[in-house]
Amino acid sequence: MEPQAERSALTATAYGAGWVWCAPGRLLHGAWVVLQAGRVVDISDQTPAGMQAVHLGPGLLMPGLVNAHTHLELSFLADFIAKPQGDFMGWLETLVNLRPGYDRRQAKESARRAATFAAGQGTVLAGDITNTGRAAWAWAEAGVSVISFFEALGPARAEPPEPEMKWEGNYFSAQAVACHAPYSVPSWRMQALKKKAAAIPLPMSIHLAESRAEVEFFTGQGADGARMEDFLVRRGLQKADMDLRAGRPLAHLLALEVVDSRTLLVHGVQLTPEELIQVAAQGASLCLCPRSNLGLTGAVADVPAALKAGVNLALGTDSLASCPDLSIWAEMRKLMEVYPELDPEAVITMATSGGAKALGLGEHFGRIVPGYCAPLVYVDLLETKKNEVLPAAVAGGGDTVKLTIVD
Image 1 (cartoon, rainbow, N blue to C red):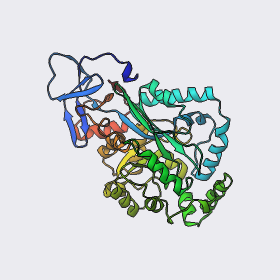
Image 2: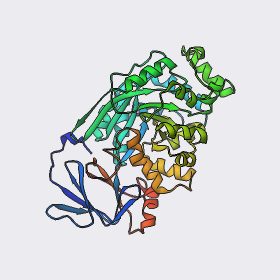
Image 3: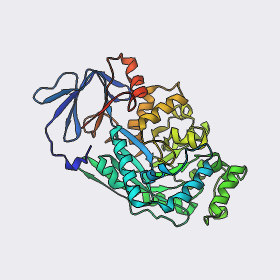
Image 4: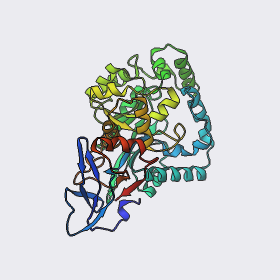
């Protein structure tokens, strides 16, 4: 893929497939999707006349994927950091110690490879956490629209720039605001950053309830919580200066009034069913990173409880420091492995429209609807019955089943 601004083809082209998944509850047999200038202009049950028509095959045509949480600029760490073994604090210590000495040329090439891989896997939109802003070019080069969330830490470090967003043709890019976590950004700064984020209609991102250490830090009980407190003290952040408003991370954020429909909570591994109901009531989204969460903490958020509560769920890969690659297909499969009772359509929704909504772009990405953006993804399945299409796509997409990027 290449940035939409560089595309000059304005003629309409119709793409047909054995199955077309437009949105939750809308799986069409033998439909055609008309694209023009990088956007969907029509969906038809007959071959449109008067334009180029390309039949892709008996498989599944679906929206491009959304990676709602990753850290592209950490891609270089894949060669230096050991595979996570369930020790979140040990991994965090290693990450912080390794990061300062990186080679910028190597980091640039690592980012390019990772973004190119993600694009080839059908990712069309990413929510990318950054401390430097140095990875946005790699997403643009790969043709993946991106929100670069500039991450604030501590009482003063890494002040995010003023939020902004722009379209270049159908290529979207933005710089937005992220607070690292409730345990690492003092209350007063988090509230100020939430106000700053409100300058554009995109969310503020916050890592939340990722580990047992975080919960124990808030309760003041447990060995992992003590390790986290010591880690922060060694970096100049005293617990007494945090102004913690509650004994649980989510309750603290709710007391600060920073959780609403423009808040993207990430991980949520330690959230209880009751807390997930609170998340849904605020209209916030929750991004799951199944492979990273399992590697770092040995668990994943309570997805059945989140779905029951009505939380909008998205999927992310996290970084290559905690995950082997940036494949959202692999995240879907891992989630189905952990929760085999999940409906594959619900999981595909997390990877498409759920992610787009979580990033504040639910009216542009994640569905095949007139006016929405391409690229789309064709999953090359054999002749398949309707009730087998989506399970087959999740089971093989980006792995044993070939993908075609349609734009």
